[in-house]
Length: 446
Ligand code: ATP
Ligand code: MG
Image (tube, rainbow, N blue to C red; front, side, top):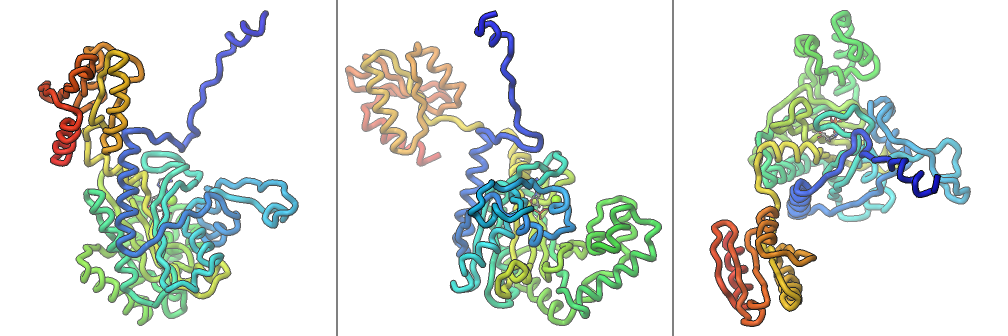
């Protein structure tokens, strides 16, 4: 058998995107770009600057910042061996591994410390956007590569106005995106002290122990490891039990109580509508006081589009100076799902002008016209091979073009170009300059 024949028989393998990952395609990517552009615009008006941290870091950074007994660190991280460069510090330590980031707060805090940002005017306000990686069970609104848009405020005074302004920015962003049915829930989880959260957790543990025969396996384990997490149980039969448990609001210390009341007042001052949810918690010690979450419509059970909270101890935990911190992370995939759900049947992305040309002279003029129109900001389709006018107009409609510019040798010879409006089939003859002016006026008006 000749080599050629062997190749023919062996069909090349077709590849598919890995489970839990997906291609974002046009026209959907236009919506992604619009949302990201809105984030850049809104966040800048609140004095935030963009940070672009790397996609992978030392595994230890996430283990420490996210917490060893969270689902993320215990089973969801994509971890791999570093290279084999004996001269590199991180590559030569035995057992050291790298991890694709499951979230970005750890990286932002690492960068704050690494670049001595505590020497800048405080607080430092940073935002980021990009892919995150978690090995979770894929389902609607839950992927293994997903995207977050997040912001962090690091340093500065102990001021409830900081919490409120961050939340105001978030809600402004969602409103500008046109997100429907948003609900903001807030809570305060106090701070890790005996007269505050630690005292509450002890009471919670006691109460849970009394009802332990009625709890599921996860909650039973959490009585010891992380009783706060029992509060966000989604199990149907545990709901009535959880509702009867002691509530943290009744156990906050005076400072945390005052802080929480001030955050609520500051939100009201800014016209931000919220709902209190005493079961909204974070399971890690350095999380404190303000926690919040936003849900939106059209998402089924994965309806949280954003989570956030205050984490005053995190920078110190990562080897930096004592630094206040608060931030949020928006799930961009879920935001997109909700936006698409409420804008069903939105017009596909079309072209402003389709140039139907025939003949060699017309082609030269058409390429020049395409260049001028694109320079003026119009989206232009210039067919790369000659098509009969009928065929070209058919293509123009298929691409949802608004106008067809018809250029044949006659048009080029008279300097009068034909412009067809596809919606009503009307045609007009215009000189080059007049045509450009006309397009400018009609597109400015629409
Ligand atoms: P959930 O309870 O839905 O798993 P989470 O507590 O793990 O959320 P965070 O780590 O706080 O979420 O991340 C903030 C936001 O990122 C979430 O509110 C959600 O919108 C989004 N998000 C988290 N994990 C995923 C994922 N696997 N796929 C898509 N979006 C995600
Ligand atoms: Mg999760």
